[in-house]
Length: 114
Length: 116
Image (tube, rainbow over all chains, first blue to last red; front, side):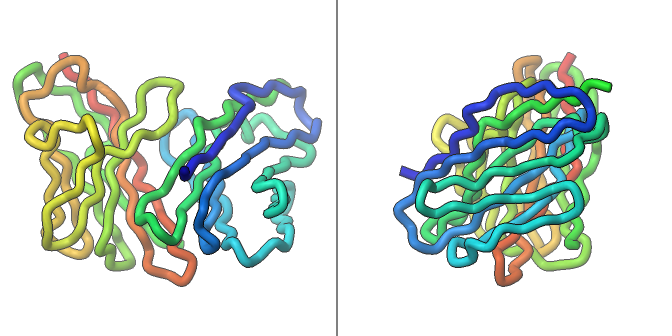
């Protein structure tokens, strides 16, 4: 089965706190791509990161960092020193090489309180 | 990065009329585009995969006669909601595969459809 699970439905933290959004995926493919997208209240989806299955190196981009662990099939996303503008719904997604479509998790609604 | 433009961003139509939503890849050619629907506070649900020059592939449960998809060129796909009803009110969003080595998928800005 091809599946993405974001167990955290909603998270609320105070500004400047660090927060980690969990993502667990399932696929039988050995080649696949993982994505994170941000969806602010306006609705559009903003591409954050793409990771292929052969690259387990963690990535940092400013306050954002991603931890890819094939052993646990997880691709977690951490925001350091969160800001109110980070408030959004965040989607983790999977594109297996055997499928042409992108499979989304259910999303995590992140609220950053001032 | 690659840009996908969707138009209109908001549309209100009367029940029984049809409405067309356009999805354009502005700086790349997209042989494959995808159409999603999103209900409030829910994830994106794939409606159909649109392939340039051929018929769209619809997901199970999506009425192909109601949601007409046309992908006439490598940069344009359209979704037409025919005989719209209030239950069709939703957020519709398209995406296109950039064709880069990472198979990155970029999304349009989305279209809010309200049927009154």
